[in-house]
Image 1 (cartoon, rainbow, N blue to C red):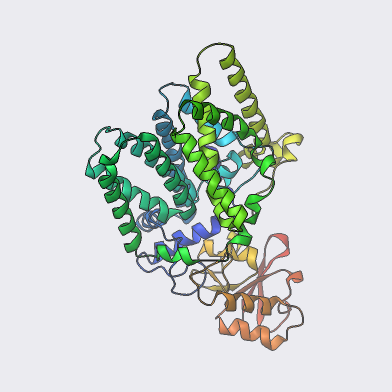
Image 2: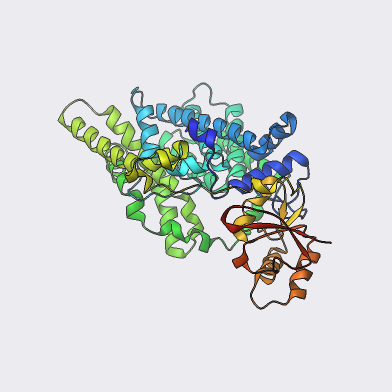
Length: 471
C-alpha cells in the first residue's frame, strides 16, 4: 500500500477530492463549489479536506503531493485503528495482524471496489479518499469508546465529550462511514453492559457531536437527510452478493461461536445491526442504505481473526486455522492484480495481467494552457477529472444536490454535444457559461473542429482535442 500511495492510481472520485483540496488552497474560508463556477456549499468540504487544504496552502505543495500525504495519514490511522480495536476484543498477539489480513482479503471471488469498502483492490484505488480517513478514525473511535466504558483510563465527562467530537468529525468527513461508525458504537455500548450510570455522559457526548454537526460552516449536514436521487447510483451494491462476499462465511461462523457464548457480544450486535439496515434498504428500495454493508462485513472479518487467534490448541483450532488460511489465500489470489498498480501491467504474469484494470489517464496535458478558474466544456467522464487541475466544468461530473441549477447545466452540456442541434444553440451555450475551452473527440458531437469559434490548441489520449473558444 505504501508503494501504491507513491503511484496513486487514478479512478472513480479522486478528481473530486483533488478539486476540493485545490479550491480550499485558493479560498480557504469561502471555496465555493468544487466543480463548477458557483458559490454553493458542498459536503466534500469536511474537517479532513479542510485540513488537507490548509496543508496545501501553507506548504505550496501540489494537490497530488498533498493527497499522498493524506493517504499516508489515513493508512496509518486504519492500520493502528484496527490494531487498537482488536486489542479491546482479544489479548492474543496474533489477533491484530490476522485481523488486518482479514479486513483486506476476506471478501469473495469477484473483485468489488467502492469507497468505504476495504478490500485490497478497493483500498488501493480509494486510499486518498476521505472514506479511508473516516474508517481509520472509526476504528480508533470504537476502541476508545470500549475502553472508556470500562473506565480505562477514565470514563469521565471529558472522555465522552471527546468521543462525541470524534463521532462528529467522522460523520462530517464521510457520511456513510459515519453511519457505520454509529452502528459500531451502539454495538459497543450494548456489549459493555455498563448500566445507567454512563447514560448522562453518553448523552453529553452525543449532544456535543450534534452541536458540532450543526455549527459546521462549510455545509448543512442535516440538509443531507433530505437529499434524494441516490438510489439508482447505489443499486449495484445489492447485486452479485454471494460472489463478492462468500469468503466471509468463515467470519459468520465465528460470529455464531461468539453468539453462543454471549448474545450481547459487540461484534455479534454490530453484525446484526449492519445486516438489518442493509436488508431494509434492499427491501424498501432505499439502495443508498447499502453503503452501511461494512457494518456487517467488518465484524465478521474481525470475528474470524479473533476466534482463530484465541482458539484453544487442538484439532478444532487446526481446522479453523486451516479454513481461514484457505479463505485468505483465495482472497489474496482474487485481488492479486492490485500489485499491478505498483509494477504496471507489463511486469505481471499473463494470468494476473488478464485480471488487471488500467487506472484512468489524467488530464495533465491540459495544464500548459488551461488555467485555474477557467471554464471547460466537456462530457461527464472528462468532467470528473478536469476540475482536479483547477479548472471548472459547465456541468458537474458527479451528482451535486447543493447546486440549484445542476439540471440546467446538464441540459446545456447535452445541447452542446447533442445530435441535430443548431450551430447557434451550441455557440449560445458556450457564451452563456463563459466557456474558455472545449475538450471533445470527433465522435462526441459539438461544434465542428474547423468552426470559426474554435481554435485547435493540442490533442490528448484517445483522440481528445483541446479547443480554445475564440471570443
